Image (cartoon, rainbow, N blue to C red):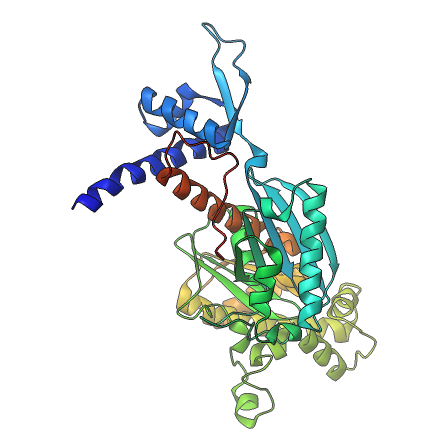
Length: 412
C-alpha cells in the first residue's frame, strides 16, 4: 500500500506537467490564465507546473499580452530546441530522412538513392543521413531524443534482422538491426513503413478525423496500415496489414504459379512488377515502368487502359475482403501506384467494388504521397520522446537542475 501511495504524487505530477505542456504546444503562445481555463487545474498548480516546465527547458517565455485591458500577462511557448526526433524512411529506391524539433517542425531533410545491397552499406548510409541533418541543425547525434526508422518488412520479436522484406536484401543479415541501433546513438524504434504512412495520414493527411480506416499502399511492394478506433493495429506478431500475402487467384496459388511466400501472391499480381507483366501480356512492350503504363493509359493507349482496368478489379477484390473483415470508414490508396495512378484507379475501383460487395467504404488518394512515412515517423517519435521526458521529469526532484531533457539510452 505504501509503495502505491508513494507513486501517486509522481503520477499526478506527470499528468499535470503533460496537460499543461500539451496546452502550450497546441495553443502557444499562451498565458497561465488560459492554461488554467483549458486544463481545469488550479492557479497555484499551474504556476508550479509552468515553473517546472521552464526549469526543464521545455517551454520558454515569449513576451507579454498586448492590447487588452488590465495588466499584461506573461506568454509561454514550446522551446523547439528542447527535443529532437530523427525520422528515416528506408525504401528499395530511396532513403528519406527528416529532423524535427519539439514542436514537430521539420528543420532539415534529405533524400538519397538506397544503398541496401549489403548491411554495412545500409548502416553507413543511415549514419551519413543522420550526421548530415544533425550538422544542419547545429546539434550532435547525442542531442537526438528518438529515432524512428520506417522499413518495408517486420522484425520478429527477439530477432536482430529484418524479415519479409525482399526489397531490402542486405537487411536480412543477422545483427544488422543491432548495428543500426548502435550507429544511430539515440533510442531507435523500427516500424513497418506502411504503418507509419497510415499514422501520417491520420495526423496530417486525408484521414484526419477518421478513426477507422486503412491505407492500402501499392507500389514496388504492397502493404496495408490499419487504424481502428483511432489506434494503429499491428496484430499479435506485428503482421497486421501484410496484405501482399493475400491469395486472390486460388487456381494460380494451388498450381504453384504464384508463390504464397517470397514476394506474396497479391503483391506479385498488383505491384509495379505485376503491372509490367500485365502490360507485356497485353502486347504493350514499350513500358519500362508502371508509371509508363499509367501515362500511356492517360493518353488513350488501349492496351495500357486494359492493364489499368485489370489492376482496378484486383484492388477492388482485395478491398472487398478488407471491408468484410474490418468495416473501415475510409480506404486510402497510397504508394507509387496508388498515389501516382490514383486518378485512373479511383473510379473503376469504386465501380468494381460496388459490383462485388455490399460494403462501400469511402475511397481517397493519399494526401501525403512519399512524405507519409516521414510524417508518421515524426509524429510517433515526438510522442515517444515526450513520454520519456515527462516520465523522467515526474520522478526527479524539482530542485535538481536537469538542464536539457535527456532520455534513457535504451532502444525504443
